[in-house]
Image 1 (cartoon, rainbow, N blue to C red):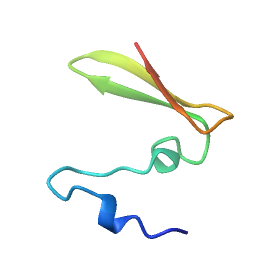
Image 2 (image 1 turned 45 degrees about the horizontal axis):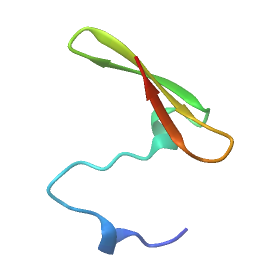
Image 3 (image 1 turned 180 degrees about the vertical axis):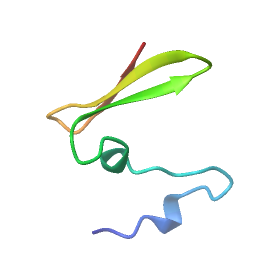
Length: 50
């Protein structure tokens, strides 16, 4: 695993997308009563949709 600590702005939280998806490729995120879908694509990109 690569050390990315020098790239991380410590003034905001950092979350690993694979942990958010519990090792899968999708997760639901709730904000103000709205449900959003987070998806990790086969190419390793993130897509967030409402």
